[in-house]
Length: 170
Image 1 (cartoon, rainbow, N blue to C red):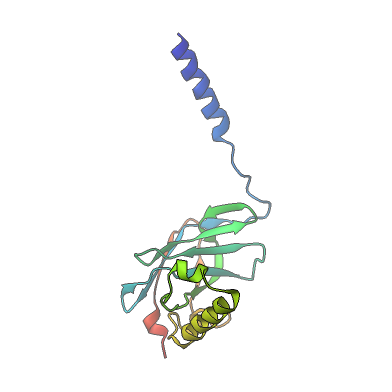
Image 2: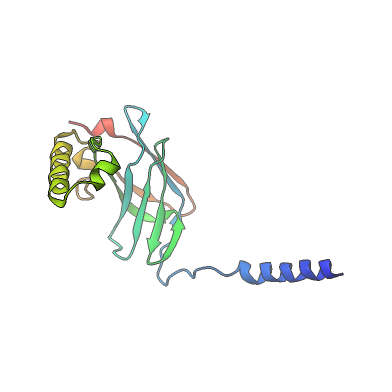
């Protein structure tokens, strides 16, 4: 009998709290699922920051994701502390960002043992060497004003967008 009361109480709590969650902010746009696959000459690119801008711009929204080891990103739309999987319906522009970085030449212990002056010099050298590396993502794809990656997103129509950045190198 006690077990039955426990399960009844537990079931009541599940029903009671299943509707609880963050409320959708007023004016939040309709969204639809969207995945992006980023490759370079057909090979997946991991760690690419993927961002969407809406046309016209909705300044209160952030739409972003990061590619996994398969080059895939599942986009989410954020407004304040609210987020949902998918992107707003309408015209959008895709931008991609990934910085090349040089390999660490010092261990974490060596870096922690440096004086402030040595650390500053080490960081300056790393930054200078990083600046010499070829860009991972062509500049044209990193700016919403120049990105040719534009699409109309339609409600209830999942979108998979495949981008091979090799096509955009000069």
